[in-house]
Amino acid sequence: MTTVARIGRLKGPLTIRCFTCAHQVTWSVAEAIRRFGGECMVTDARRRLACSACGERRSRCVDFV
Ligand SMILES: [Zn+2]
Image 1 (cartoon, rainbow, N blue to C red):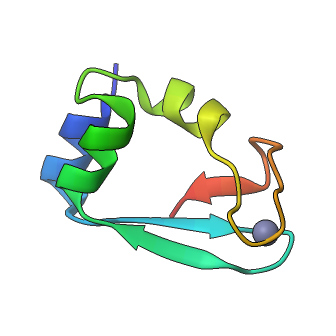
Image 2 (image 1 turned 60 degrees about the vertical axis):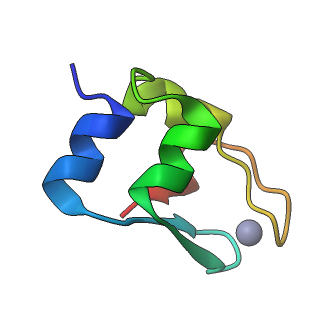
Image 3 (image 1 turned 120 degrees about the vertical axis):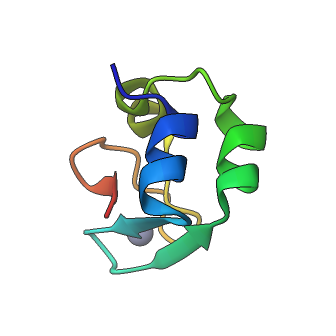
C-alpha cells in the first residue's frame, strides 16, 4: 500500500521518466500530491501519468524512477 504521499516522504521529489522519448520531469512532493492526492496509490498514479513531450500513456513506459 504505497501512496504518493508515502513515497514522497521516503524518496523526496519524484522523477517521472518517459521511456519512449526519455523526457523527464521532477515533481516536488507537494506537486505530486496536488495532482494525484496524497492518498492516491502509486499504482493508480502511474496509470494516470502521460508524457507531456510525446503523449505516451502506456503505464509501462512512463514511470516513477
Ligand atoms: Zn515521451
